[in-house]
Length: 238
Image (cartoon, rainbow, N blue to C red; front, side, top):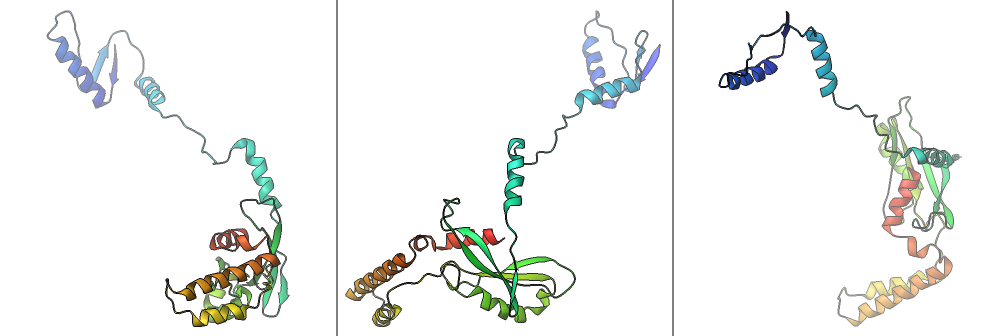
């Protein structure tokens, strides 16, 4: 006769079965909370535990990389195809270009170069890169980069500072409008701010004429100079 020691939860289950069997004489069960005696079963306690653990063990799945195996090669090839920025020293900063599409909805369409600048960290330990967007809109990122490098000299010990000249300005496919901007400025000077005055109509028409002149100078760029394109440009630089 072999004595098997089972977990308390199993023993409790057998005890419940035994209490039910006591109401039916044809069912005989000899159960205690500590042992189950059997005259024929020679299976060891470890065999039972091993079998139970194997049955209850959760299925182990390989971690999902998040990349479809069929396209992994293509993804790697795409990453490798991103060109490094070639930095050239110009005064106190380094300057390079990043090729971006005019229209991010058509990434294989015409492209132009964004002018980017960098000031390298002054210390031996790198904590990354800070990309500055100086707003404006249209602020000269490269000129302002020199300024912040002096103001935030402590951060410059650990971080490279990078910025860019936004599309349509300062060498980033600069937009050259044919109309004299002074005409628009003159209308702005006399506009009284009312939404119902005739001066508003004059202002809006003057702005339309000015924008049309800009469209003539760079038709590819003029419809893609909003903040969404700016954000996409930042991702391209990153």
